[in-house]
Length: 375
Image (cartoon, rainbow, N blue to C red; front, side, top):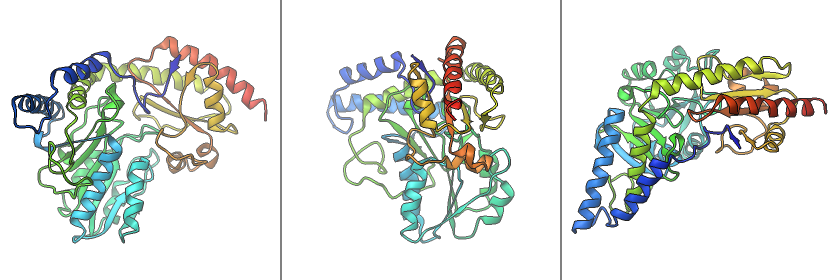
C-alpha cells in the first residue's frame, strides 16, 4: 500500500498509542472526582496540559480540549459571535477555509450576521490592503486558516495579527489544523487557534482550541464539570495524554522533517511537469506536505479510484468536504474552472519514502495514459 493522504489523517504513532493504552489502564479515576484516583488522574491531565502549553508557548489555562478541529472551529466562531454580538455582527474570512468554518458561519448568517470575504493575491495569500479596507467598527471576528488543506497555502498570520491589533473589539481565529506538527508558528498575534491530534500521528477524537485569557466564549456544550468552563464533559484523560505525546514527537525534528518533505514535493513537481494535461495548482512556497494537481478532462474521483486499483491512496478536495463538483479553493487561486473540477490532492509526510513516490508515479502514469486516451 502507498498512502498519500496524510492531510486527511495520519496513522497513529506506536508510542502515542502505547501512551493511550497505559493511561487507560493506570488512571481509571474520573479527573473530577475528589478521591485519590481522581486526584491522580487530574494531576496527569495537568502534566499533559503543561507540556502542550510549553511546546506552543501558550498558558495552560488557555487550552480547551475538544473532539477535534471541527468542534474547535465551531466553538471559536459560534462562541465569539454569541458572546460579543452586542459589539457587532460582521465576520471576515476567505475562500480557502475548511467546511467546519463555513458551516458555523452559514449558520450565523441566518441569525443576522454578515460575512465578508477578503481578497487573495496571486499566490493565494490574504491581500493585506484589502483586509484593511473591509474591516469595520462592527467586525467582531476574522477567521483565517493558517494552512489551506487543499493547496497548502500558508497565510501571513503575524502580519494579519499586527493589522488587527488596531481593532481591539475584533478577535482573530486561526484554524491551524494543517500546520501544527509541521511548521513552527508564532501564536502571539492570535486570539484563538484550532488543531487536532490525528493530523500529526495522534489519535482521532481529540483536539484543542487555544483561547487567550482575555476572551470569553459561549460554550457549545453546557452542564458538567471538565478541564475548563467552556467545554463540559468528563475529560478524556487517555486522549489528552496521547495528544501531548504526539505533539512532542511531531515537533522534535520539525525543521529536518520539513526539509525532507520539501525534497519529496520538489521531486513530484518535476515529474508532473512532464505531462501535458497536468496542472499544478499549489503555488510555490506552500506547505510541502500538500500538492494539489489537476488532470484536465479527468474527474477527480475517476483518478482516485484508478490509483486505488494500484493500492495507492490520494484524495479529492479535503476529506471533510461535501461532494461538490468543483473545488472552491482551487478556483479561488487559479480562476480556472477546468482545474477546479478536476483537482486531486497528494499529501506527504515524514513517513513517505522516495521509493513509494516512484511506485506511485508508475501507477499514476498508467492511470493517466488510460484515462486521457479515453477522451
